[in-house]
Image 1 (cartoon, rainbow, N blue to C red):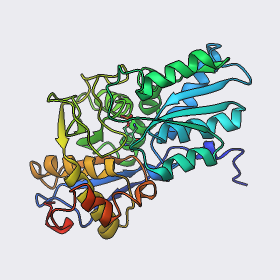
Image 2: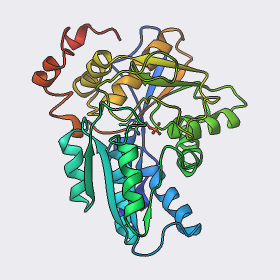
Image 3: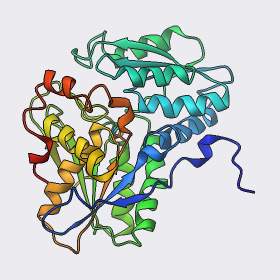
Length: 326
Ligand code: PMP
């Protein structure tokens, strides 16, 4: 019999799906790693177990404890799944740009959600990081995983995401394109693939316009889960060979094309990563095997990216999606 004792046992081993329509003219192959097929619906399911295992082993998390974390939603879901199984309470602190659907999901898993303003600097006491730190100091038995510093995040990707890509491409992968939020995915996945290929695999980071990883001024943007106005400890900037910036309009147009042309209903950071993958792929030829990670599902963005009204209000529906280059 094939029976699992917890849904968390089926995290990882997500499929690689070759894009057939939103493809480069160069003939380079683009393989999407579809992370919404994780049980919590995103790539972040992968880090929660590793982070809580380490916290328990180090005595930072005791029975009856509370997990407090500033998160754009997906890390919260991953932590909520693991916390429920292990008997911990959860409190998540989210910036107010996060879609209401994502908040309801966290609450559905039994978490408490605290909303903070997006338009303040990380150092501001009202920022989601500052509010989370305040809650940790107030709640007895509180533990903050701190996904921006916790090295068990990158380690989880070094042990799962990287080896899966190598295995599923029989070692033929040539380029991997990964959106950078905490940098955990790119750091762990990229480090593994660099090591196993003796540096042959090229690793490309992607951030929104308005994020500072590859320079430039910080400003707000609409794509969720990626980019920052500081360098997190979980991001080893030595791992990516280069970092590309993609704007919201291009990210969202490609996200919508993935749903209508590839039957992949994914979130905006997937469209962003694809924008960079297409740019890179146009420099290559049919021998290139470009893997791009699609971090989460589009279901959390139905009233945003997939709403013409919202897109128009944001000034992001200025040209038909089909005219955005692929
Ligand atoms: N896309 C989405 C939708 C996310 O929630 C995240 C996690 N913040 C990422 C991409 C980036 O992953 P990482 O934090 O590992 O860099």
